[in-house]
Image (cartoon, rainbow, N blue to C red; front, side, top):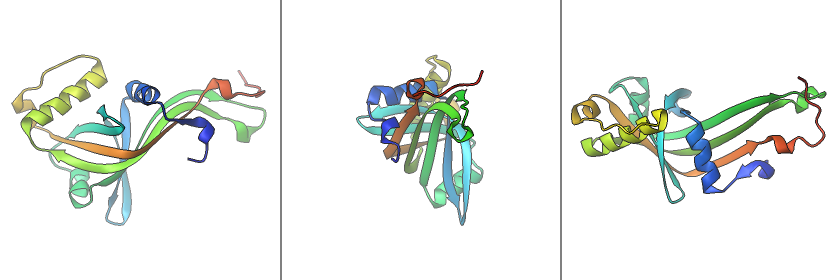
Length: 166
């Protein structure tokens, strides 16, 4: 990470970002072309391993790609308010983000699929719902397991004599 001053290593701060955000952009390689798709997610931390859960239709481009090459990159970010300065190159956004690499694994077991769907729905809605076996079997569920991720943020405290425009 180039900007070590913005790096987040505290697991509670990382889970705070994951809790605030609702969409992950997942990048994969479709033969010789990159393909990125935004997806709703749920997650869990297993020690320092991040597990992201997703669901989608049982067929389609992303499924075909992941069956051929399950290596992925993902980004999750929370865009804050804009930062305008008298020097345009110093303008930007306050933000927090997580970027990582991992592998996508399809979840076939109905019990595991229901558990993943429960985590996703709870993360997205704040409600605990039990999915039925029929509901779980009607969708494709996969997870991304990542040990290789970083988190960073730019917070207002970093302003250091920057004049903001209203």
